[in-house]
Length: 612
Image (cartoon, rainbow, N blue to C red):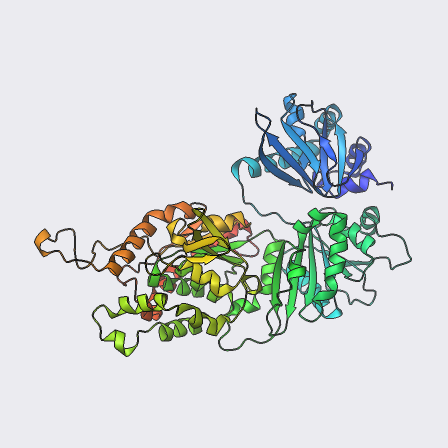
């Protein structure tokens, strides 16, 4: 099928600001390359005499060492370029490049491309900007926002189409000028949004070029092209749209998701790599998202949007689903890493409350030990005040333990040894799995068999908590599927790095073990030897855990953009019954950081988060 290089060039960032004359001359020098998955683009150690613009699709690059082993693998996506640096150096590079997905490229002879960059200043500036961005991302692990220009929403039923309208309105309010391509001939226009209707079945084939022609009169500087189709649309034509879009959102309800499984499977049969850009969007009415294992296996991530009114015990995060989707489209992903610290970790609840009340929408949470417990409870949709009340009630020692010396210590040991945490948490979480929670949550634990960190982002939510808070000595390792699992603080106490690896480009870390009183078992640095008191085994275990946590804070926390450190050193590690006081300390500390957080977020997106 003939593909017009001019139309393809006009949709690539390299054309921004170019005159019509310049675009036509540059396009005339280009050759269109249509590559199927696995098709070689360039072989290592061959001289690079051409350069490529990636119009849509994805290229996989394997970089080899001198022994011929793959040193690293990286990907370049639509809107980028390949070969510019190698061609400029004039030397062969140890890189194999193949198409990871169905890809459309514009290939230029390097010398001709160089001539064009000399002739057109804007073309040169655009190309240098694209090259610099690629270098920044690869070498400096830059986390600047990446905003998809073309997105598609597939709707399993008419009721989910309201989401398209909501997104268009929200994007417009953020200063964007989105355009809409829809298959709904009866769709009502959206204020200030240009709209076209896609061909119906039996009319012209909806291919990549036809899509370009349909939107040909829309400015190439438009920040967003939104396409919407029914999931029942012809799979071959739907595949053409998936090919050219950078992100795809598959919108379903709890009642109709099953019908999407074979449709998505057909799309992925055409290109398995498309899974990386397909997102599941649940539109829910009060009920939780189904497990839908078959469907989740076909997508990269999911979003849950709750339409029902909140119950008193439910938190505001349940109403933030659309905002999380908007943040994703704007290239902003906010993560919160919650550290371990036994009872002191209850301060995390106050931090989460302060962030929520000040309009900072969290996209995902990673937690270790007490951070996993508070993070999972919050991520389940429970209101912070309700969670605080429940923890105070459920973790208050009984009359018997309150009248024992060091009763709180013995009560905590009793809770561990008799397995009381599981039924306590299950009263509120039931049999929910982590992948069903309204907010993605990652719990961190350690496997003693391999000696490695284990990050849970699926499976029984209560199990994820119990594994992460499983303190050695207080309880035996939890044996599950060839793993012996103990408290995650053993290796990674504040898992900010987990969030960065999951795509977060702004991470708030919360540590409750930064400050430590110089006192242990009533012994102080100036206590004479003869007057020092002997510590109990439980005191020793908990103090050892705290000392380790203080010294392990720097391991996972390094990528964090800001660290909130509530001073809870006056609280004992076993004082879970003081959750309300601990939460209040966390809230007050976080409130002191809100302005700084918003200023930092404004550098990522000053429309979503205007500078205070």
